[in-house]
Length: 214
Length: 214
DNA sequence: GAATTATTTCAACGAACGATGAATTTATTC
DNA sequence: GAATAAATTCATCGTTCGTTGAAATAATTC
Figure 1 (cartoon, rainbow over the protein chains, first blue to last red):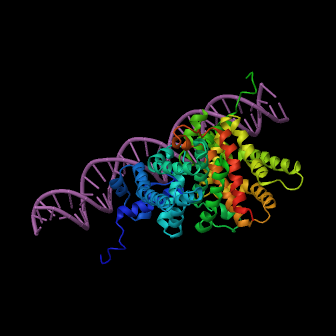
Figure 2: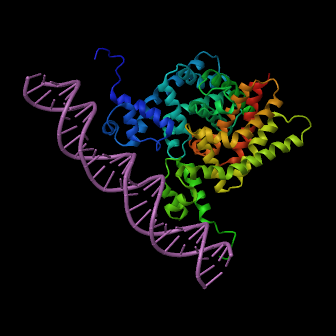
Figure 3: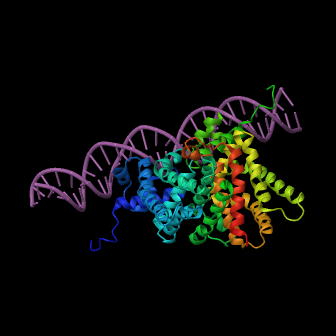
């Protein structure tokens, strides 16, 4: 091959296809044959590289989790460094959400699919909570601690409930299901990450302040 | 039979089983045989009563949708009747959420399963938005109009985005996935509808006011 | 209470599923 | 460039899936 850059090895193509299809239809709504077909490889290759179907799903979830955690951690450390004393609520919420907004604004379909996949796992009842816990809760706990420093009078219970509302609002936005397009009659678009996060940040910030002000 | 009250016909038992299992595992994560087994009926009976698997799913979704719409409509009409002029944001949000809180506080497992089913459909990418649109959007539009009267300076775009954040927060609460239990180390419980909605109402109200205040 | 209709079970179909071992091709090592 | 290892394909296994037609049972009608 003459171009190293544009060649995507089959192992990665399987992950890309799995990412998109799992995000769209869920774990049980996708067959290994559909994934293989979309990736233009044989069915058996998925098993060769990843083992069981469940293992392929976890590998897909893991691939970008570390990157996502990292940009979010850097965002938190950045506002903590550039602020004398503790960052305020809006700064912390912004640090939490802006990295995701930037990923979606980039227009990278892979990241868009991954965001929808995270939304699916977060909303999943059975084994979703364990995957979220293992991969994201350590970082989330750091954010909640930061919020606690910004809202010292808040109880941990209130903080966790408020985070759940934030998480829910974020999840529906990540999923980009097209619901808001339909409800608003085309006025708003699920894919409009600019508006979605520009409005979500003040919305959530006001919610935290209102519930936890004292 | 001596007690008409406690006898549940097989058709209803199928819907009950489908409700619970579809909510837990999604449309593709459940087989008709699992549903039939849980309902203690033969597999073929589900097809006899409801036709295709997809039709059974829609019947399950439809069964309680009308009731839910009705209590929510009555709640909106009630606050509009007992308020001179327009109800404020908190009253409207309360009317939207309190009926669901009451359903969950009742401890009825059937309604709990149905709430989780609605959460699943709302988060579902492919055909979820059409089901939500057909069954719930007419009522939701009435609520958004009421919010517009309470926030006359808000743009429709902002109102719809704020509703999406509300919808996301609500969806995650309806699903009762146990995520908050895990994240908070047992401090909060997904099933605690009292706290969930008592805090969600001021949180969301403050969000609307902050984004749409002018 | 016979006839008719509605409900429920039984048995089975073809299709698609995840998975695996053997064969084949490609890449790497020495 | 032969030997070895990795990657990929092929063929196929046993299982389970949704669905259906026929048979059996229960309920309703007249």
